[in-house]
Image 1: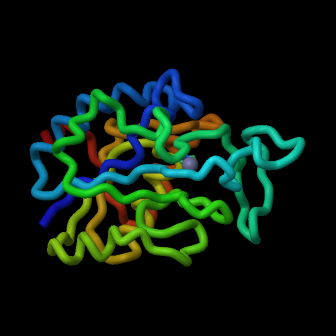
Image 2 (image 1 turned 120 degrees about the vertical axis):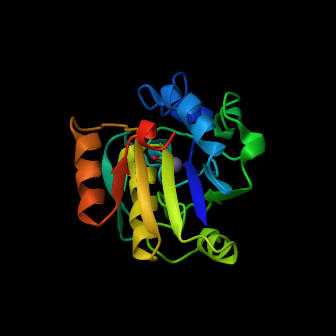
Length: 204
Ligand code: VGL
Ligand code: ZN
């Protein structure tokens, strides 16, 4: 079974959002079309409490983009985003949400961030995504969404490490690009871990 994993297509990551990913909205029509081609569609949802440790606003004198050590892990500080039950945490209304079979929320623990849809950054807690895919006999995953250089990348790396044949559809992702070239750099990093990088017209 093949599954499509739709990563964090939420209002705060789209133009006008608090952590807007440039051109993030441009992937949505592609993702909607891809959904029809998969037996199973799952989505991840960044879902932070307001006092989350990844928010610069929760660290005195810090601004977004700075790096700190958060309970022993390197943490880039972000603007407040995807606060539980806020409008910014909602999936885009352009996204065909009715096609999503199951949603996995992440980033709920204030002490540790969670870029991957499978585990938190310390690999301590599991979201249940792996178990759900296994229960549905999924062995191949295609990953799309936001952002290429964070949540897409870490979800893909975990999927590959968990033994799934893993593919990323590059034009159905966009990067934050805090540093120029982060998009290309993350594709390279994923390729080097055996992850296949496709373009959507090779699949649609
Ligand atoms: C993400 C930064 C912070 C993402 C989530 O979805 O890529 N990036 N939280
Ligand atoms: Zn986040």
